[in-house]
Image (cartoon, rainbow, N blue to C red; front, side, top):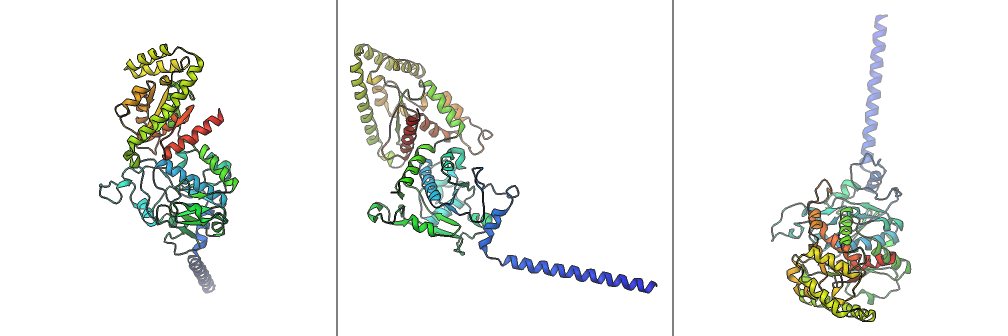
Length: 465
């Protein structure tokens, strides 16, 4: 009896060992099969992960957006200053909507503008240059003050979402981004996953919405890409190089033209501190729409070289406006001698705060051309020294420097208030632009994209009041 029980136990243990061995063998076979599966499904697997489990900060920016295996994406390489980046963002949004793709947005650089470069170089610079100290002779020197910020921290993306254009934030420009988050080798060995459109010259491709449009519309662009062709691409990702340029999209379709105009006017600054501080300044100016505004850019690039010409153009525009304003004054039959005395008295006021209050007061009563309240947005560090003639001619001309308390409160912005900023000074140009955009009339710097932004927002402001 003892021997039979022992034999039975040995037999049972043997069965268990065999069963476990078979299970292990089956598991190994399945793992090998899984590892040999095409990369085509790896990005889809990532999308199927529960969002709470995924450590990536890349996520849809709109609660109504759902991600599924058939989702297709469009992205591009960023460069240049903030408002050039906004132009690229709008172009990308239009393309994403027209192609029914989700816009994968690179972060905005809120710091010093970076140069355009051919796609391969730009990809390398974006991957390796930000976040490091660079000497003047370094190939990364223009990234010395690179400050990446999520797009929706600066710009209001609601207009995109209202049009049904899906967005997702990309927080990482590293070489292995697509491999880590999407299972795609960015060297594009698997060409079924990504279609890349590289630009090797500054104005390489222009994108046309109608195949019948002749190439004569290319102007400074080297080649054309048809929207119809892009719609045939089935790769999950369309990767553009640069999408900067107001003429990058050659649009003839009324729906797309209307969408572009809509986005240009409505995608504005949303940063709460920028809006609050701009309102503080406007309150001191007597409120929005109570002043004329000017944008005078001359601090960098060709604008620095053409500074004298730009000042002359701005002065001429102000004088033409003043003459028109003066003609209206004559029609009101006010006392010109009395107003001339007021101009003289204001000119003698050295306290800028008192002069501002006096200028706001006289707006309600007098219409002398040289009494017009003017706000000038400028990148010049010392405008009072640089524009002596303008200040002398227009006694009620003010700049951001005339609001020291507001400026200091912006500069004192702490990291715990805005974790993406290391320097509140980066917000000052945005405040400048917001104040200028709420004027009753705006005079731009020719060919400045910042002026273009202010003009678009000024147009929208007047449509809303």
